[in-house]
Length: 223
Image 1 (cartoon, rainbow, N blue to C red):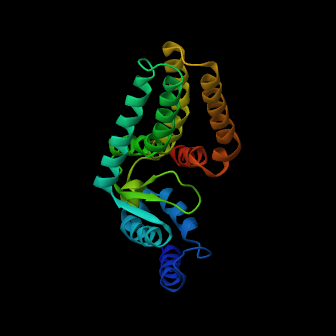
Image 2 (cartoon, one colour):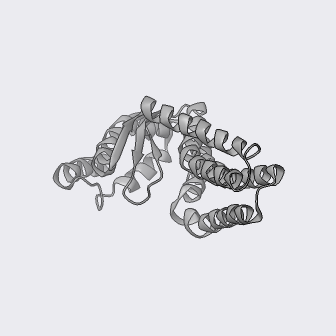
Image 3 (tube, helix red, strand yellow):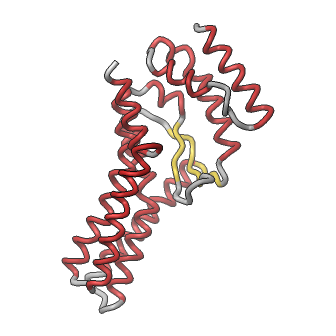
């Protein structure tokens, strides 16, 4: 037990009840301390998960049960792949339209699935799908107790998985478009999407997105 962590978690619980947020309570600082000590993980994982879930229920705009959300994302991925495959059979300009729409669908559906698949392989559980207040892309919410119990390396690669999948989607689509012989304008659109994805990762994700979380968790692996 750690008195400082206990007090911080008590403060976070009070803030959640009063304001619906743990902001300004030192909650995430306490989480960082717990991550650095497996002994503390054994003591505090469940309580941290309870607070994290309560906060999630307050800020997530749209929530979908895990099974239903996963089925929806898998179905969307199948639709996206079918549309991309249709580019081989359709005449212009429908081939380009099918390829671009299929790629857009895959960008929406595969990001969270990447997190989910790698996380489950690492023993991380998830509690549901959501759409948050800052971005419309569906996300999948971890069960924080199982997240804390997973190795730091596993946590890092779980975060990276979604970003990697998102970057691969337009690159693979460029290959499909080249093989299917779609119009140059469609290839240019896919090229722009691929470049924007890379620039966004370099500028934003390394500061506050998936790659920032990847680097954060790897630091625990080195301790």
